[in-house]
Amino acid sequence: MESSRTPLHDFHLAHGARMVPFAGWDMPVQYADGIRAEHLATRASTGLFDVSHMAQVWLTGPGAGAMLERLTPTDTGAIAEGRVRYSLFLNDAGGVLDDLMIARHNDILQLVVNAGRADHDIGLLRASLDSSVTMDVRSDLALLALQGPASPQVLARLGGDLDGFTFMQIRNMTLAGTECVVTRSGYTGEDGFEISMPASHAPDLASAIAADADVTLAGLGARDTLRLEAGLPLWGHELDESITPIAAGLRFALSKRRREAGDFPGAATIMAEWNNGTARILTGLLPQGGRPVRDGAELALDGKTVGAVTSGGFAPTLDAPAALGFVDAGLAAPGTNLMAVVRGRETPVVTAALPLVPHRYVRN
Image (cartoon, rainbow, N blue to C red; front, side, top):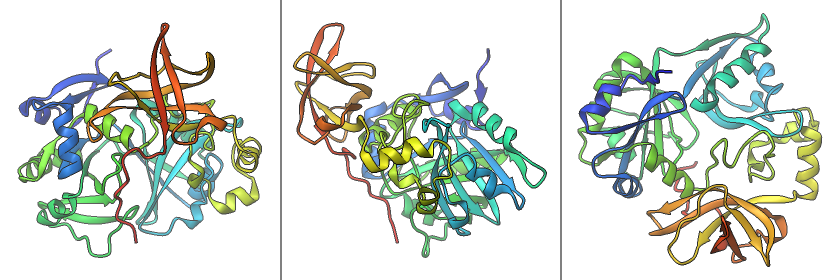
C-alpha cells in the first residue's frame, strides 16, 4: 500500500531528508547532519519538524463538549477560549485508546490526534456523533512544530505576536504572510509552537522558517529521542488499551470535576488506582555501561521479572543511553538497581525520575 505524503514531501527531498514509512505516511526520519545533531540543535536553539501526518479534527455544535466528555476524562466546559488541554480517549476498563490535544478556538473544539491512531480515533468520534455535533477532518491543513529555546525569537521575526502567549494557549497569527493558528505546545519538553496553516502555504512557510539561522530541520528520529528524554509517552509503547493513566503517570489529565463525578470511561478502575496506587508505574531508566536497552526488554531483580522497557535508545542531551519502562510500584523510586534482560543478556539499569531532562515550558 502506497504511503501518504504530507504537503512538505518535496521540501524534505530538496533538503536531503532520508524518508521512511511511518503510520501510513512517507516521513523524514533525519536530514544530512543526523539525528544527534538535530536533537542537540533543538535543545540549544530551534528545530523545525513536519507533523502534518497528525490528524486535525474540528468539532462544532452545542453538543461537542458533552460528546468529548463521553470519551475522555476532560472537563471540556473548563477549557476556556484560547486554551489547550491534553486529554485521553479511554476504554471501559480504564485503558488508553489514544492521547490527544483539545483546544477551544473561535468556539470550535480543535483536536490533534496521532497519525498511527487517526483512523481509530476518527471512527470513535464518528460513532459518537449526534445531530448536535458536526465533525470536520481538516485534510486541507498542514502542521509544523517549531521547538527549542530560540523558537520565540524565530516566530517573532516571522511576525508572530507572542504578547501574553504562554504554554497551552492558542491564537491566530500571521507568519511570513500566511494566516496560521498557533499553539504554544509540543512533544520535546522544550518551549515551542505547533503551527497549523493551509496545506498549500506549508512549503513557503517552511522555507521561510528554515531560512532563519537559528533553525535546524529535524525528523522523526530526533522527535523520538527528544520525547524520550522528556518522559513523554508514545501510544503503543507507554500507552495502550491495557495501560491506565495512573500507571502512565498522567494523573494531571484527569479533570477534578470528572474525578469527583466518576463519570468517564473506566472511572471505577482508574479512581481505585488513584486512591490506592497501581501495581506497576512508568519510570525513567538509565542503563549502565554504555549499552542501550530497547523496548521489549524484560526488567528483573534477583532473577524475578519486575517490569519491562517500553522505549529505549541513546539520549544525546545526557550523552548516554536512556529508556522508559514500567516497573513494580515498590521499585520505582529513583536509584533502584535492576537488570534489563534480552535473550539472556543482562544490562544493569538504574531507575530515574521523569523527566530525564527538565521541561522548559513557558507558563503563566
